[in-house]
Amino acid sequence: MAREICLRLLSAAPRTRAQLADALRRKGVPEDAAERVLGRLTEVGLIDDAAFARAWVQSRHLGRGLARRALASELRRRGVADETVNEAVEILEPQQEERTARELVARRLPATRGLDPAKRMRRLVGMLARKGYSPGLAYRVVREALEEEGADLEAVEPPDLQE
Image 1 (cartoon, rainbow, N blue to C red):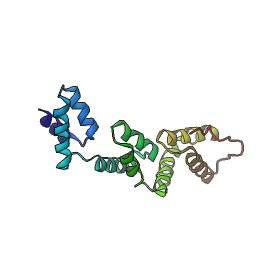
Image 2 (spheres, helix red, strand yellow):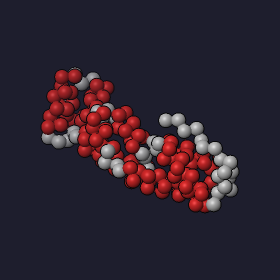
Image 3 (cartoon, rainbow, N blue to C red):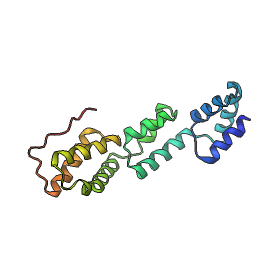
Image 4 (cartoon, helix red, strand yellow):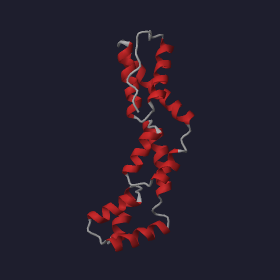
């Protein structure tokens, strides 16, 4: 029964070992039986948290523009071990992360035209912050994009940049 539950879940989408263990626990599978099945599925390569984490980082960064911090948080919520999470997010180069932040701002910039520069700054920095970008990087990228547009940022105070 435990094997069938795991295989059904894995056929729908990749899962972490912790996600499968939670599903088995919810279905009332005894812990010793669950461990045997999870161990066997790991041995044969059907459960691979490191591969899951690497694929997750690539997919979510490219698809949603999420930064390392947000990706790490998502992986931890899925039960991936801290060491595996750290290795997975390290594949994202800082230059790639900055390039993605610039692309996100460039996409959102037109929708903020006509607004007060301070409001534009807050909205764009907030959007990057929600995606896990550091406050310093978010502020710098947004400021540069607004300056390139010719926005007058003399009186604009930096948004509250708390980590």
